[in-house]
Length: 90
Image 1 (cartoon, rainbow, N blue to C red):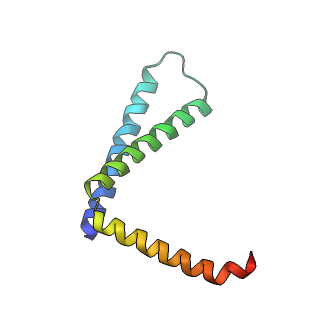
Image 2 (tube, one colour):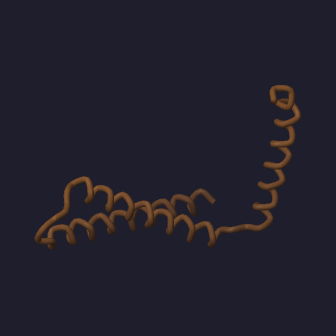
């Protein structure tokens, strides 16, 4: 199970690495380059979008409905317990 996450992390980092190389090549080809802040912002947004898409894809591939139900049940029980003890503070 741990190797699956290691493989997913490796693939995400690999995709991000290729994305960095592609952005660097595209920026060299441009005649008039935008400011440093604009380039950094675009780069960060593209990293975020790539990581988000990879994470969503990984989540959809490894989605287990029974595990989701267990997590929801644990969350509901824990919030019920916390509200029982914290009710006096409100």
